[in-house]
Image 1: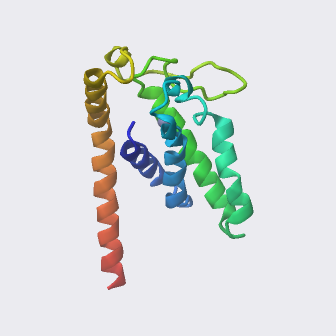
Image 2 (image 1 turned 135 degrees about the vertical axis):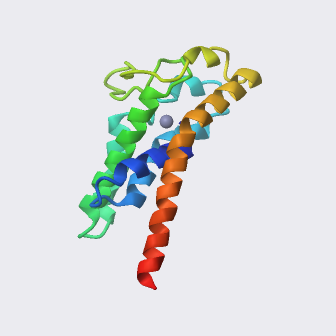
Length: 171
Ligand SMILES: [Zn+2]
């Protein structure tokens, strides 16, 4: 998924649990793809969906909330960051078109190099070429954006509707 897809999926999931901090949930859902800072390196495919796509990384980036968030919100922010990260791992496990280092995410790395994917909705053959090959990468991007669109449209529509309702209530 793209960052917009991850943010939208987390937002939609968070709507069913009003107790959660939506901003922390969406932030948690975006953090695992921080590994894209290494995208231009030839070894990126080897670490993508490994280094930052495991439960230990999710825990490591969620734990500071218990230290630095306010006393009344720290539990809520911690759980929201944790859930957002887990939603990211689950969606990546189900939408993977890059078979270079496995299908899904290495959710228990470094304890295990095994990739978790209950099912895969994308065709991994699309990107069986090397990352720098522009045509397969472009096709892959279009397919991924097409899968993200329903999430982005639904989340955007609900977000706008809720904002309008909040403005109406305040006037
Ligand atoms: Zn990811």
